[in-house]
Length: 158
Image: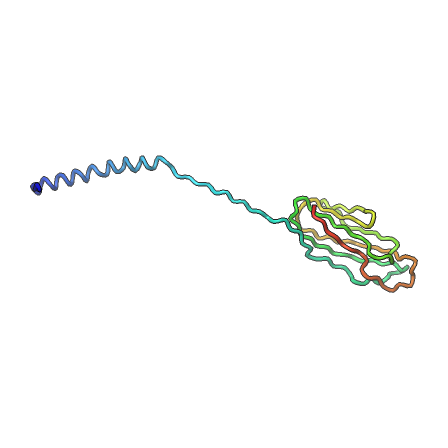
Protein backbone atom coordinates (compact mmCIF):
# COMPACT_ATOMS: atom_id res chain seq x y z
CA UNK A 1 0.00 0.00 0.00
CA UNK A 2 1.30 3.39 -0.98
CA UNK A 3 1.31 6.17 1.60
CA UNK A 4 0.85 9.73 0.40
CA UNK A 5 2.07 12.66 2.38
CA UNK A 6 -0.72 14.17 4.40
CA UNK A 7 -0.87 17.60 2.63
CA UNK A 8 -1.13 15.89 -0.75
CA UNK A 9 -3.98 13.66 0.50
CA UNK A 10 -5.87 16.70 1.79
CA UNK A 11 -5.42 18.48 -1.54
CA UNK A 12 -6.70 15.53 -3.56
CA UNK A 13 -9.71 15.06 -1.30
CA UNK A 14 -10.63 18.75 -1.48
CA UNK A 15 -10.26 18.73 -5.25
CA UNK A 16 -12.49 15.68 -5.55
CA UNK A 17 -15.15 17.31 -3.39
CA UNK A 18 -15.05 20.49 -5.48
CA UNK A 19 -15.59 18.52 -8.67
CA UNK A 20 -18.38 16.30 -7.29
CA UNK A 21 -21.16 18.95 -7.04
CA UNK A 22 -20.67 20.03 -10.65
CA UNK A 23 -21.05 16.52 -11.96
CA UNK A 24 -23.94 15.89 -9.52
CA UNK A 25 -25.82 18.93 -10.83
CA UNK A 26 -25.49 17.72 -14.37
CA UNK A 27 -27.01 14.40 -13.47
CA UNK A 28 -29.75 16.07 -11.52
CA UNK A 29 -30.74 18.27 -14.45
CA UNK A 30 -30.74 15.33 -16.83
CA UNK A 31 -33.18 13.44 -14.60
CA UNK A 32 -35.54 16.42 -14.23
CA UNK A 33 -35.92 16.83 -17.98
CA UNK A 34 -38.36 13.87 -17.95
CA UNK A 35 -41.41 15.19 -16.09
CA UNK A 36 -43.74 12.76 -14.42
CA UNK A 37 -47.45 13.05 -15.14
CA UNK A 38 -50.56 11.19 -14.14
CA UNK A 39 -54.26 11.47 -14.85
CA UNK A 40 -57.31 10.13 -13.12
CA UNK A 41 -60.79 9.73 -14.53
CA UNK A 42 -63.68 9.83 -12.07
CA UNK A 43 -67.17 8.83 -13.14
CA UNK A 44 -70.18 9.18 -10.87
CA UNK A 45 -73.03 6.87 -11.74
CA UNK A 46 -76.46 7.70 -10.31
CA UNK A 47 -78.57 4.55 -10.35
CA UNK A 48 -82.03 4.88 -11.89
CA UNK A 49 -84.64 5.08 -9.16
CA UNK A 50 -88.26 6.03 -8.85
CA UNK A 51 -89.67 6.41 -5.39
CA UNK A 52 -93.13 7.43 -4.24
CA UNK A 53 -92.52 9.60 -1.18
CA UNK A 54 -96.20 10.34 -0.57
CA UNK A 55 -99.57 9.28 -1.96
CA UNK A 56 -102.13 10.78 0.36
CA UNK A 57 -105.89 11.01 -0.14
CA UNK A 58 -108.96 10.41 2.00
CA UNK A 59 -109.78 6.74 2.48
CA UNK A 60 -113.54 7.51 2.56
CA UNK A 61 -115.37 10.23 0.63
CA UNK A 62 -118.45 11.89 2.08
CA UNK A 63 -120.94 13.18 -0.53
CA UNK A 64 -121.45 16.91 -0.95
CA UNK A 65 -124.71 18.54 -2.12
CA UNK A 66 -126.30 16.49 -4.89
CA UNK A 67 -124.64 13.22 -3.86
CA UNK A 68 -121.31 13.85 -5.64
CA UNK A 69 -117.84 13.62 -4.11
CA UNK A 70 -114.75 15.78 -4.26
CA UNK A 71 -111.24 15.14 -2.89
CA UNK A 72 -107.61 16.11 -3.24
CA UNK A 73 -104.81 13.62 -3.77
CA UNK A 74 -101.20 14.60 -3.02
CA UNK A 75 -98.60 12.59 -4.91
CA UNK A 76 -94.87 13.21 -4.30
CA UNK A 77 -92.48 11.26 -6.56
CA UNK A 78 -88.68 11.32 -6.74
CA UNK A 79 -87.20 10.02 -10.00
CA UNK A 80 -83.74 9.85 -11.58
CA UNK A 81 -85.14 8.42 -14.82
CA UNK A 82 -83.69 10.35 -17.78
CA UNK A 83 -87.01 10.69 -19.58
CA UNK A 84 -89.22 11.04 -16.51
CA UNK A 85 -92.24 8.93 -15.61
CA UNK A 86 -95.98 8.62 -16.10
CA UNK A 87 -98.76 8.11 -13.58
CA UNK A 88 -101.88 6.31 -14.74
CA UNK A 89 -105.01 6.89 -12.64
CA UNK A 90 -107.88 4.41 -13.10
CA UNK A 91 -111.31 4.06 -11.61
CA UNK A 92 -111.66 0.88 -9.51
CA UNK A 93 -115.38 1.02 -8.71
CA UNK A 94 -118.67 1.07 -10.61
CA UNK A 95 -120.31 3.45 -8.10
CA UNK A 96 -118.98 6.46 -10.01
CA UNK A 97 -120.75 7.69 -13.16
CA UNK A 98 -118.31 10.43 -14.21
CA UNK A 99 -114.91 11.58 -13.04
CA UNK A 100 -113.01 14.82 -13.61
CA UNK A 101 -109.39 15.40 -12.67
CA UNK A 102 -107.51 18.69 -12.58
CA UNK A 103 -103.93 19.59 -11.69
CA UNK A 104 -101.49 22.38 -12.36
CA UNK A 105 -99.55 21.54 -15.50
CA UNK A 106 -96.26 23.35 -14.94
CA UNK A 107 -92.66 22.29 -15.47
CA UNK A 108 -93.58 20.13 -18.44
CA UNK A 109 -96.15 18.03 -16.54
CA UNK A 110 -98.94 16.93 -18.87
CA UNK A 111 -102.37 15.54 -18.02
CA UNK A 112 -104.43 13.73 -20.64
CA UNK A 113 -107.54 11.55 -20.53
CA UNK A 114 -107.17 7.90 -21.55
CA UNK A 115 -109.86 5.27 -22.12
CA UNK A 116 -110.07 4.13 -18.50
CA UNK A 117 -108.89 7.24 -16.60
CA UNK A 118 -106.12 9.80 -16.82
CA UNK A 119 -102.42 9.78 -17.62
CA UNK A 120 -100.08 12.33 -16.06
CA UNK A 121 -96.47 12.48 -17.37
CA UNK A 122 -93.25 14.30 -16.50
CA UNK A 123 -90.49 14.88 -19.08
CA UNK A 124 -87.31 14.63 -16.96
CA UNK A 125 -85.86 13.47 -13.63
CA UNK A 126 -86.60 15.36 -10.44
CA UNK A 127 -88.82 15.59 -7.39
CA UNK A 128 -92.44 16.28 -8.26
CA UNK A 129 -95.24 17.28 -5.91
CA UNK A 130 -98.54 16.78 -7.73
CA UNK A 131 -101.79 18.08 -6.23
CA UNK A 132 -104.65 16.30 -7.99
CA UNK A 133 -108.20 17.60 -7.58
CA UNK A 134 -110.78 14.83 -8.17
CA UNK A 135 -114.52 15.28 -8.69
CA UNK A 136 -116.76 12.22 -8.86
CA UNK A 137 -120.42 12.01 -9.88
CA UNK A 138 -122.43 9.26 -8.27
CA UNK A 139 -124.06 6.65 -10.45
CA UNK A 140 -127.84 6.00 -10.15
CA UNK A 141 -127.34 5.03 -6.49
CA UNK A 142 -128.44 8.22 -4.72
CA UNK A 143 -128.61 6.53 -1.29
CA UNK A 144 -124.82 6.07 -0.88
CA UNK A 145 -123.52 7.90 2.19
CA UNK A 146 -119.80 7.39 1.60
CA UNK A 147 -117.42 6.00 -0.97
CA UNK A 148 -114.11 4.20 -0.49
CA UNK A 149 -111.23 5.86 -2.38
CA UNK A 150 -112.11 4.89 -5.98
CA UNK A 151 -108.82 5.60 -7.80
CA UNK A 152 -106.00 3.16 -8.50
CA UNK A 153 -102.60 4.82 -9.06
CA UNK A 154 -99.93 3.14 -11.23
CA UNK A 155 -96.50 4.62 -12.01
CA UNK A 156 -94.37 3.74 -15.04
CA UNK A 157 -90.77 4.77 -15.81
CA UNK A 158 -90.06 6.16 -19.28
